[in-house]
Image (cartoon, rainbow, N blue to C red):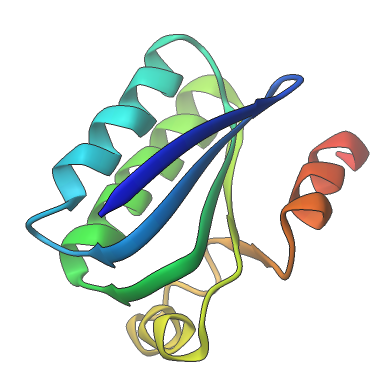
Length: 114
C-alpha cells in the first residue's frame, strides 16, 4: 500500500492506495498514531484508491477514531469509499460510526462547519 500525508490547515489527510489489509495496516496505524500523539485530531482518511479493506484495516480505523473522539475531542472522516469497500463497512455495521464524504473538499469543509 502506498501512503501519502497531506496537511490543510489543522486538518490532516492520510491518502491510501492499494490493499488495506493485515500486511499493510501497520503502516497506516503508525501514521494515524503519529497524528494523534501530536494532538492532531481532525483527520481524513482518503480511501478512493483502496481496492480492498480487511478487518485489520477496519480495526486500525476504529482504534484511531476512538482515540480521536474520546481523548482529543476530534474525529476521523472517510472519503471516497468504492462501493465494494463501503459494503464492508455496511456489512460490519461500522457505517454508523464513521462520517463518509464523496470528496476531500467536502470532508475538509465539514471540519470547518463543526
